[in-house]
Length: 181
Image 1: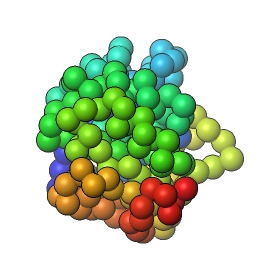
Image 2 (image 1 turned 180 degrees about the horizontal axis):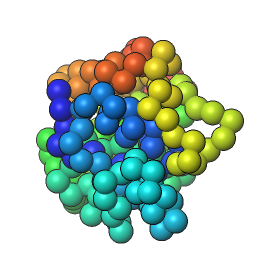
Image 3 (image 1 turned 135 degrees about the vertical axis):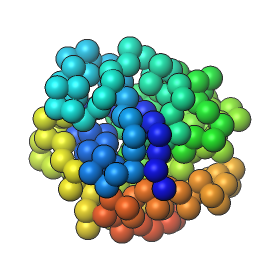
Image 4 (image 1 turned 90 degrees about the vertical axis):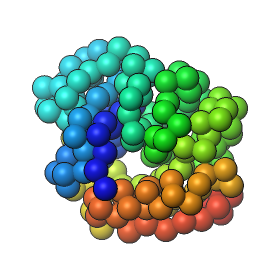
């Protein structure tokens, strides 16, 4: 399993660590990133977390076969809406939000037909410090990641999500969004 293009939406601790872990595992060819802050995008480039900084969510998602949404839960609705038309039907879309029901509601309200690409995920990992400067490839190793797939999520998307998180060292489990929250 190798991805051609990871679109990282949110270049902070969680997203940056995911990108570094995928790169270290040899699972991705190119990593593009978008963050609302130009300074964060430039820092992610300097640290070689991303290969290319994008000026918008839609630009980052264009042509990506893997998309990780690593923004605050309150920003997910706008991010889903911004990516909907650029998201490939074959792409795997995941998030790292700590709550699932509200993230899923935002996805259902915005993604339309692309909802089938989405596998909600919650990696239970982090640090006392945030930001791209603290990203590390080992953040998800030996940590639990919970997947909360939707009825519209195809079994192959759920399986791909499981394989991605397992490949970067997570112990993956699945539950309903309601049981998670």
